[in-house]
Structure formats: structure tokens, C-alpha cells
Length: 82
Image (cartoon, rainbow, N blue to C red; front, side):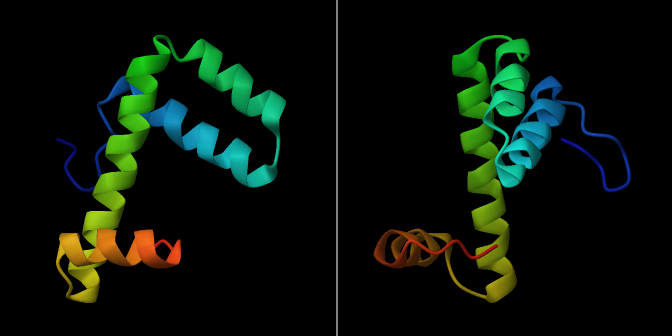
């Protein structure tokens, strides 16, 4: 677990953030380059899914709703509460 103010310790974190940045820029070749250098694709996919789940859970808690309600809302509307 990372403490506030400390650098993340999971080796996939930097790759996941860089992939998100590349995706936001619409740069598929940059995204693909990062993903291919990140190691085992299954591990990376799982890490990104875990990161998204934690972000959704944190947003639900900030908004004062249960995680289950947040997942239901996302499925119903397609909108992420981030």
C-alpha cells in the first residue's frame, strides 16, 4: 500500500498512468508501446482493472453512496463517477 506523499510501489502503476495519458491523447502507438514494455499483459490488465475499481470505490465513498450503488449506476448510465 502506498502512503500519501510517497511514490507508488507497484511496478505496474507508472505504466498504467502512462497508458492512460497516451489514451487521453488518442495516441494508440504510444499506448501500445507502453503496454508491450510493461511485461505480462494479463498482469497489466488485472492491475488496470484493480486501479479503476479502487477509483470507483473512492468516488462512491466521496459521494456518500455504497460501492454497490455506484456499480449499478455505472452499468445503467455508462457514466463514471470520477
